[in-house]
Length: 277
Length: 281
Image (tube, rainbow over all chains, first blue to last red; front, side):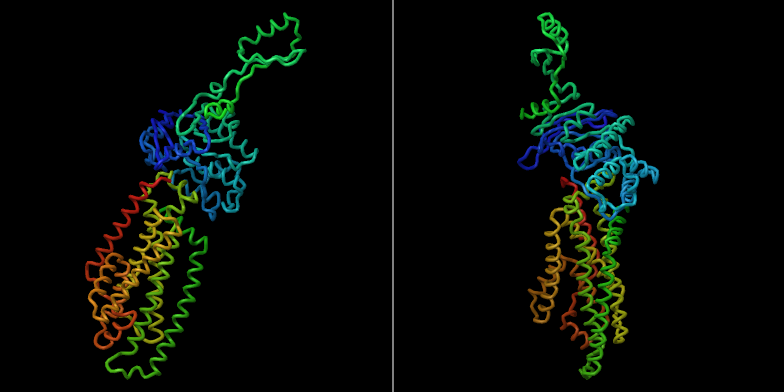
């Protein structure tokens, strides 16, 4: 059973059609990246999965339970793009409140482990209001992980983090994958998604315009050969053709110093998919 | 329970209760001084010579009635500020979403917020009313004819105002909701005063308008019931004199008032739950 299954999901806000029949699945323990320009419908999709927004038509299921039901809520953890926690609570108290709401019996041990995992072990007694935005974002991730959910929905979880914080989150996501937790990562940071995600879907104007592994989405870009007479690019060539190209160049008297197989990056694939290339 | 406790905890941590307690003590001290002076004036001015009117009862009931107006107003302020941004305001600030993705229904969230706010406001108006009654008795020796009944009616009035404010918070922004609830509260009070004027002038139209308004806004009917209860056993010219004053002449809405208040509360709650269930966050 997939951690998240979305079938022909449509959402209309008065005149605006935010989602136009989106279907996708996130498997158990899979890290799934959701990419797309602003206003593409990514956050709406995530909010429908969380039960915060009602779909116009279509279905969203979390671990087999319809989105918005208590069973679905028990199986997921969520960090919104724009969130705020009561600033008068300490980090430990906040996690305690969410443990009670989630029905988690993890107690002090779970709270300590999660704070450790997001690098906030020293800030357990610090009030949310006294934390930087980056610390609050990491606390938000810890909060989403309360009760060991099967699916984590993270909407721009690294938007306020510095490079060190981003690396912490990246390691955390890899740790989650090793634990079998599925993650839907909604992010603008293509390099980050490319680094950690098993599969990616690109959404534009409310529809999935491309999907696959980062490798599948990246296209061959030719073969680049560095010779004594300069760098030569064989734009149509594939990786398999590289030895033949080198042999022919050597036979023709060229001195070859290096060969590089070119592929388009996820960024190229993204720009092409959303029609901005 | 967790959400209700969170609301109460917030009020404590943000020193809401401390500020309210300090200001209420100041208010009661002022009330005590005023009451003491008023009874002293009654004693020295020879008001006791008025035929058939018991000056202590007249002064005591009028002063406690004034206090009840003030107490209900303060209770309303508390009710509005504890609930005005409970749904839309908190959702706009991103505070609500992390709670709603937990296995807690939206109905439970609303109920918890209402229960917490109502408990605070009801306890507040009951405490201030009882303290004011004790102050009035200590200053002039007058004790209201009923104590528990008006206390319960004031508590029910603020519980209804909490429900209205909470329901408003589902559809209105915090500022608009606060303004709306205060205007509704003001409209209720004006309707009550109109009824009183109608009674003094013998205008049935004004009385009918006031009665309909009180049924539509039952916190006003409960407030009038509470005002009436403090002199429920007072008779004769004293009662007549009280009826002509600004805090007398309260209408008795009969035995249907409590069931109606309950139905009204459930109706407002159901409407709020239905609107909240349909709201995209």
